[in-house]
Amino acid sequence: MQVTGARNFSLVERELVDPGRGQVRIRVEACGVCYSDGLGVEGLRADPSTPVVPGHEIVGVIDAVGEAISNWKVGDRVGVGFLAGHCGECERCRRGDFVTCSRQPAMGSDRDGGYAESVIAQANGLVRIPDGLSAVEAAPLLCAGLTAYMGLRLVDAAPGGLVAVQGIGGLGHLAVQYAAKQGFRVAAIARGGGKTDLALKLGAHHYIDSENLDPGEALQALGGATAVIATASDAPSMSPLLAGLNPRGRLVVLGIDVAASISVNTVTLAFGGRQVIGSLTGKPIDNEDNLAFALHSDVRPMTEVLPLADAPKAYEHMRSGRARFRVVLDTTA
Image (cartoon, rainbow, N blue to C red):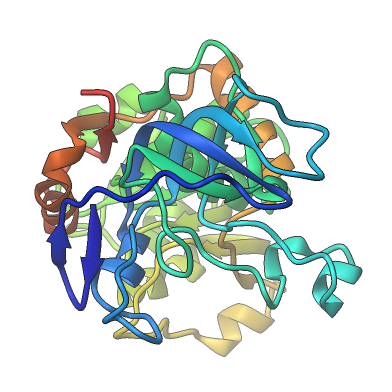
């Protein structure tokens, strides 16, 4: 399912190609539909007239291996996330910071992604998929799950410490689960009372309705948060969260808002040494840690599954905000 321009989808057949040096070919079983797919689907590329296959939450089985590959073989269950593989040569790579590699392509926008039956992937971007996770379960964990998992890795809290998750959506419903399973006392923050029962079911210990309560004041009433994981794509809604942090607390920003900014009170920031920090994703080995934790701690995405032929419908449903909570394409259906 390729796209040209903005949202101009077309289902096409392409010649099956062999993987090149340092690459593998994957028979795709499932691909999650993510907000970041908009880089390809919305034409936010250097040349949107060139067709590209979206999708970067890819799970499948290797069916061909290129030259200079020693750690992967035909039949291995693998995944590919947002980052398609680092170059190993730029300054960031030479310093071991592979996530910020200056020449790293993104799957589904710089390279053809997983809205397809087959995909070519760079071997150093592969993630091993453990037995016990289905393709549909694993796919959203490769991007949304990893984002939540790595954001929580930035939390310096003792067991039982208060960690808040703002937004109970595609990212937030996973972040609540990860935080609870890591032993934190979790406060879920969302607009209205409609997600109270869901948040508690996911593992939250407290629910804060930000439409009727100031979330910063509500967090302080609970003793103050060591960290707030902000997952909603709404920067202004993050601004009052800083006041809910205890001294040395961190506001970890995962949600992306391209239209607005966070307003920060410098007194609140400076007095108490509070921090605002962003987090995006992780390395393939981090993703394997993420999947292992999810498997053994029973963290699972809530999914809606559609066939590959319905990719345009799946993308529109994801963008509408009505999905509960991750949309996944089943390429075997």
